[in-house]
Amino acid sequence: MIDTLRLTAYDAARLLRDREISGAELWEAYRRAIDERDGELHCFLHVCDDPGGEGIPLAVKDVIGTKGIPTTAGSKILEGYVPVYDATVVRRAKEGHGLRVLGKTNTDEFAMGSSTENSAFGPSRNPWDPTRVPGGSGGGSAAAVSAGLAPWALGSDTGGSIKQPSALCGNVGLRPTYGTVSRYGVVAFASSLDQVGPVAKNVRDCAFLYSVIAGRDPCDSTTVDVPEVKLPERVDLKGVRIGVPTEFTEHEAIEPGVRDAVHRAIELARELGAEVGGCSLPLSLEYGVPCYYLIAPAEASSNLARYDGVRYGHRTAEGGDRLEMYTRTRDEGFGDEPKRRILVGTYALSAGYYDAYYGQAQKVRTVLIREHAAAFETFDVLLTPTSPTVAFELGAKTADPIAMYLNDLLTIPSCMAGLPGLNVPCGLSGGLPVGLQLLGPQFSESTLFAVGYALETAIGFDPVPLPLRGGRLR
Image (tube, rainbow, N blue to C red; front, top):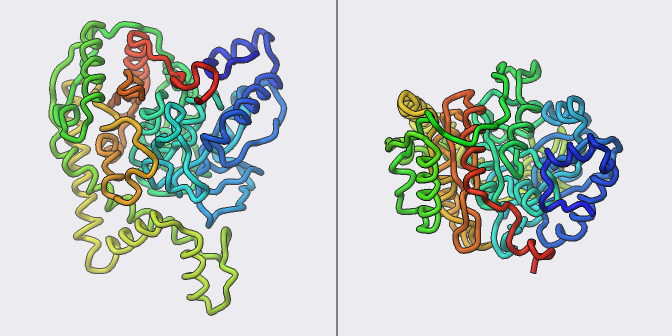
């Protein structure tokens, strides 16, 4: 019997290649796992029938377009929408390596959130403790990989939506350099920030899936040619210069258990031969979140204007003139968080306020980019916690949007700078995973994978959630 809890994509590929299992058997194993566990965890919004073939199943976040498969972005306004084409990342996964779409995973509505509680179709739950959130917005993808419901998954990251849920669920997750992965066919949130990336059980699987989806796409003018992705092999860090931003590791918002696990990882990096030194990113930490929550909502306001009940998606059944139809459609279709961000963004872009808010935020963004660039003149990689806390209880922060936004305190600054970031699990605090964030300069994904692999090997983190090691949730 196939143990999907511990099966990596690499191992699955080997078993298929050696004909020890068939593609149908592999598919059935994951469908059986979904049937057994997803009723409680709610990782998937849609599960697909077996399309045939011998490729490895792939879970896909429901903001990524899939031909013939519903794509809702976690929103009632897109309920029932079925794309007529695949997003470029899905096409590359299917055509280049025969991967098969297993299903569409739950997400905060339009990827707006840090807990997956903003999904219009109900929250996902954390496999390590189903009373807690899996993070967001890609909590469905992270929880599915963690619970053995998929060997790997595609997510999207605007301000931390791959890295943060990967930290809370004990996965490896990469937010790539902006422009290395196509956004064609991906439901837009904030176009200057959105980026698709992989979620996996380990660093090698994550690196391989990134190599599958990365590269220039003529359908997305923001994409570029990327360096060859090198799968990690080294298990030491000799000659690697690692910087530790003091503000990120000692901030008062960081839980003691998270801080302790990260400090142990820092000491381990030294033992592996890395040159570890302190550095400072004071402006990035202070202004990252407020800068993000002007730019991202402003771009969301523009992108979400297309959902008007005319072209596609939900349209109100109530009567009235055109303006009333627009108003009712958007009121019925959008949840509280998209409405909140649309209002903030529209205000920031309005006449008389554009320069004071959106324009000023873009200037601050340039400062954050320069501050990170200065740090990378001295260091190859920066190391910080990924999330200030471990997974928190469902409902604990839904009434306080600011408290929810601060979950991305440590992931947002590098996203604003367009830099790659890799989450690697580095231990447990109170029985829940702690994530280590590795940041690099543009196009340094292979370096991040190499450092992450060495640390992953030395840490020896067991990615199977404690409640599932006995074969059941409870």
